[in-house]
Image (tube, rainbow, N blue to C red; front, side, top):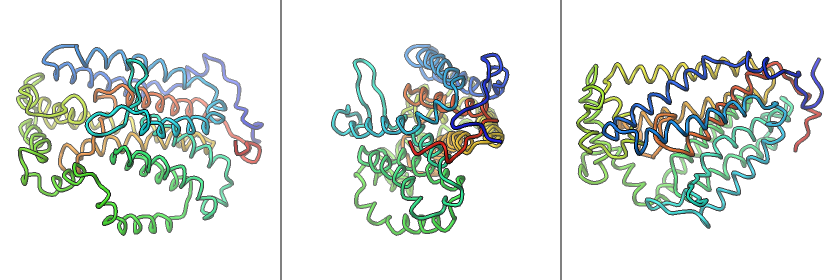
Length: 381
């Protein structure tokens, strides 16, 4: 029947490599190559300052991915809670020791290296929730008392990032956490009450928002009201998207990006820059690659026997989907601008490394997909 507590079938190094989903690795590598090409274009035909660093970070991330994927899954089961605690401590340290940039404290500085703890929490939250539901018997999943712990796991980091303030990441935490609760089997009644509660809290939350956050929401409703101020970013983004047409203006020929009309073109608005140069055809091709990555994650999650492996893979998949959805919808003016990067394409070190860590966990789940645990023998810690 089941293997002993936290014991997986012994796989050799060669067997683990053979069980890799190499198509998945190829797809995420394609995304990284698109990012490098886009950053090269953004810099006016230069690998410096973004494209070269992007490639180096991806190579480091690829090494991390293989290391995480080849580690015995029982190690990640045991490290799930410690990783969450470390990420939580780092989030708590941000308001005290963090470096302020753009009016917000979101980074910790370690020498010459800056680090955004919220990015680590995105993966840590997935690990912790998957670990909790691997231990919890299925009959207690919808028990109100059993829901207190996972809800607290989600609510605490949400509150901490809202204080930074970082509304986009808070939404991502809530979406990923809620998605995992649903996939774990929590009753839909709780989600109905949750949605009603969120809607009822909107007036109170509005009063707590910073002025620039209110401006983003108002700009989303009517960007033309302040075309040279709060509405400038999204209006320029729409102009660039529309000017790309069907086939685009050509590589490194985008006027909005090359003439610096487009803001944050190497991070938040890189999809706009790509769409202007490659047009509708290029944009859809990029989104199809993301879709294939997501389908690969779903495929790997469905093949896993243990609840832990399934939820880890699913959680990383939800994270990727929310990342892409918010970024693309944001630059199109469908949601307020919240500063969420486009995975593996936008420039950003912490986002790249933590996402590759998450992808490594997905591959780890796939490699150990036949592993099952005796839930009553796993223990809470």
